[in-house]
View 1 (cartoon, rainbow, N blue to C red):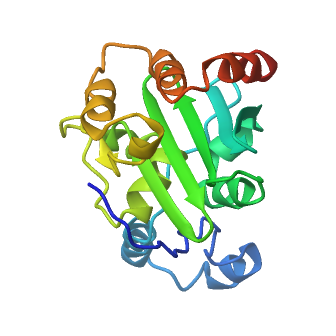
View 2: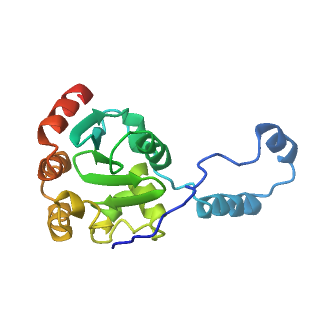
Length: 211
């Protein structure tokens, strides 16, 4: 999937808007068992199935890449940004890259995400849409793209902009082939991507500080 349109978006509110404890005390005598079951179903439909945050141990790496005066720069980012696409995009916008900045993320050795920000223009790619059920960063990408969250028994498939790094030297068919290599460690695939777009040495140094 490829898009040249600017993407402006607001990610789902993860807050808890359930009735407060005091209100629950007042309503204890009024809520029947049948009503309670109906409330639970409604909460589920409103998005309470959002995946739990990846822990520090789950996040293999999160590294930002950009070029400053033509020279490649790589920076390890806080692992918590691997749980919040909106915050990650904000962080990338602050970087002084000549042509924007790119974030490479690998989670649990099973899925990788690429995010590229150039001003208001945002591109995103996830190696496996099914991972949206397990990891917040994958879910955020699927939401950003306006796609339905796949079922657990759906086939793994990459989603997003296959041409996200085409101008940097990684063609869409190459990225697709890497993403569909589900037997390979996703962190290894991300390292190959960084090398392919000529950030290899800088990526390795940044990764060493992340670990």
